[in-house]
Image (tube, rainbow, N blue to C red; front, side, top):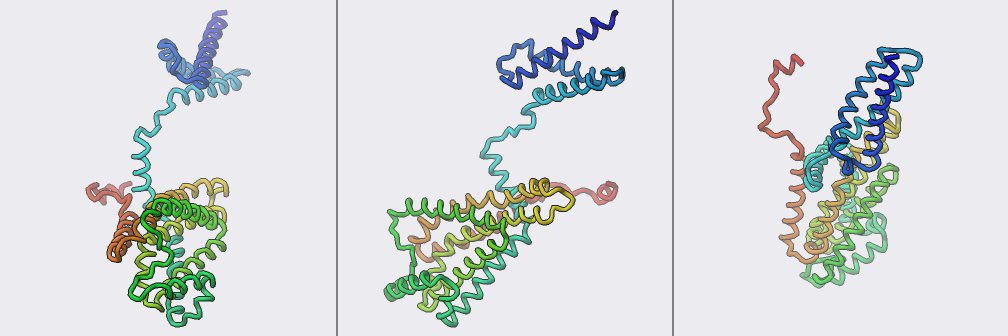
Amino acid sequence: MDESPQRSEEEARLDRLANLVKRVENFGSGGMSERDLVELPRLYRFAASEIARRETAGGGAAGASVERTRALVARAHAVLHRGLEREKRSLFARAFEFLGREVPRGIRAEWKVIAASFALVYGLAIVSFFVVRHDLDYAWSLMSSEAVSQEIAQLEATAEGEPFRGNFTFGIGQSPTTAGWIMAHNMSVGVIFFGAGLVPPIFLLFLAVNGLMLGTYTAVAAHWGQAGAISSILWCHGVLEIQAIVLAGAGGLVLVRAWIAPGPWSRGHAMALESRRAWKLLAPVFPMLFLAGMIEGFVSPHAPFGVRVAVAVGTGAAMVAWIVLGGRKRSGVPAVPAELARSR
């Protein structure tokens, strides 16, 4: 007779907790009174102790009762601890941390995939350059005949002693519009390369076409003694641009690897794990292409030869330093003593 009122009181307290949790779930804690805010953690602790008591008591209905109480405690735990792990830093600080530390680590972790992609692009570029430099007729087989014809016409129209500028003949007044168009175009190409990475044969084809085009275009200009002039323009922005689109495709390849060789995981779980690594390769593509577009619109067509070379070398050196040094442990962090390391 004495236990029935006690159980009713316990159930009433659990019902009260359930109502408070529901209010927070639906409307947040902003409209709750001070009394409710104080009562919520107390009822949460009571419900947690009730789980242990009911499990110890046993009985026919104990199993279902314990499960209901455990579910209520889980919901209360969620609303009480909501936001404790939320990042307190600003979005800019988190983005800087991600791009400055996590991305370089991700790139270094996938160096084999990235190095193989670069080897294909630049290997074909070098081979096609020397082939076409030796015999101009090969240019028609290695690059679009329309592009070859257009380049030769531009070269022949270039006055003697004037540096070859290719398609970069727009004035400074057109630079803002042109830079915007270039950035939009290049970013769409980055997305296409990421998609191509999901189908490796297509990605390899894209890399091969770009490598052959790069080498052939430069070699055709070399027959008119203009390889240096056009290279200074192309590489002024191309140091960032070409590396960015290769990174985008490598991100797609990382996801394909999870599908083909998931290891001990299910394919779905492997894809979820690898998607984080793929994002670290894809994320820097867009700021890199943004900067490359600005350079291509404002610097490459208008700056003197020396400035173009300096920009190419500077952006290349900065990119290498970022990848090699970004996210490394500080040298001031003390090393773990050998004795302690062995005892672990």
